[in-house]
Image (cartoon, rainbow, N blue to C red):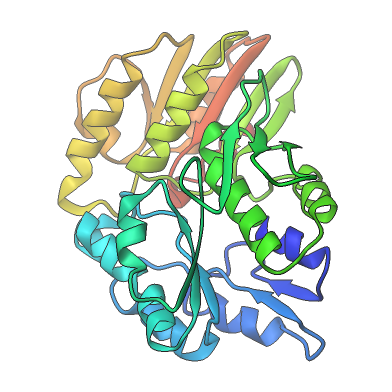
Length: 319
């Protein structure tokens, strides 16, 4: 979304697909041509010093950390390690006179950004760009306060958890003087891809395909948002969460407990530590077996959430 907003006004290059690791980041840089005015580069990481290494050759002038959830706990060494590892981006900006965009709703990001030469904020309150979710059945609609031309943005995104993503795209567009009408049009014309919060229609059924990746934080947000849908029967098809280390079993148990708080037409759990814990739901060792189960069902006018870690390849359930 940041790319779409900037590309409406500048010659912009960005990361393709999931090329965000030690191979993908250099490939992304090599794709940036001499006519570039902007480059938006995603840096993924699952261990300490990884983002630090990327900064040595991406040389970022501006940066943002979307959040520090319970992702890659095994490699980072717990939640504190996640903040330390992702914070390597802010360390570089702090040392090199860069600037950061901060979600003011997250106190830990405010703390992590201290000492950076310039900080711009976005959030639901106490920020330079303030926005909120408009109560609306269906796709995410966002209201931006005190920003003429951006009063209402109707996105093609599933889930209120995408609000910070919309807000940071607005904040970056405003900072770089992208006209409000271009920001609005870019965000309203953006359709998610690559199994990231895609809304897919299968006959009379609707599928939220969010199978790009998963961790305890994103799983909780996706399930709670999905549970709010009240116009259809609902089915969960969830793959296991990987790279959680010693916390993996406890996090999968907590997820099963969360699932149990709501009413579902059916629940399917796939692979990993879901096999190691007791639960009353359907279990399959892999996504292909779950696909065969789904073929035997006769769901009509049903909503489905498909989510799991990348290695689970949960999108294959729909093949």
